[in-house]
Image 1 (cartoon, helix red, strand yellow):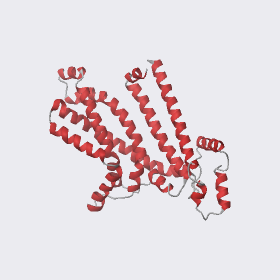
Image 2: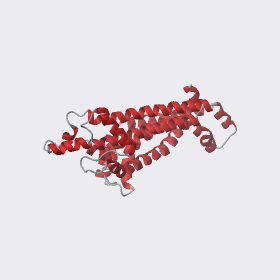
Image 3: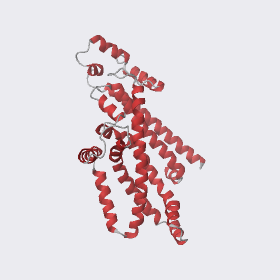
Image 4: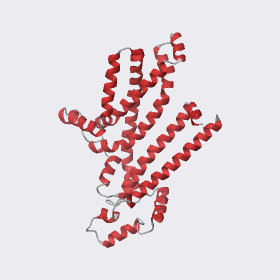
Length: 316
């Protein structure tokens, strides 16, 4: 098994490296694809020509493209993302200030998603197995289908209108109090919970029909042992795969929700930076979010190969 695992790990590592190189190149091209002069666009038409030229030289935009790319990659290796066009603050400091808030919101949303979706999906599978309780199955399918179809921004807006404006139960903005987390978490977690619960239900139904589950039932094991010890571990393979993708999506998907709730994270930072044409900040945030998505998918692939050796067989 050692050789198939090594080949799998090398292939996945090479794929991750190539994807990361493509991402770095795409973020570099952000300034190259802007019509006209990105420095002039960011400083405005009234900026002195000397200031524009000075800023272009600082960003190496007066040099050939390949040379600019080399400077860009070298800066990334050193952790130097440049300086914000608007504040002059190092971009790395802006990210260091904002990223913990985005990460905290995404991680809490991920934990909430797992704690709600996995038990919910398993419970629905147990209750509706063999065509029993069709009403519960139909209600579950309709509800989760509706939730999945609602965009995050619309969900967030509806939550604000109902719970913050109409009922005045929860705050719209802020992050200092635990109540400020409720609405953003619901807005971010609702769709992942619905998706993961549906997948967990399908996987649990498959597991419940396996021969080893019939043997476990014949031993009259307590329900807690039957479902937690025997069914749950075999359901987690698909759940882990989807959960990893959901975590990556949660980090990147906080952009819209953060702006609706004025959450002081990367989402509000990048939305503020785009109209300001603050390209170094836009580049850095896009690169960071893209790297997180790639890294999470890479780690999930590695964990899945360890937990489910059958994936190595399918690879080979």
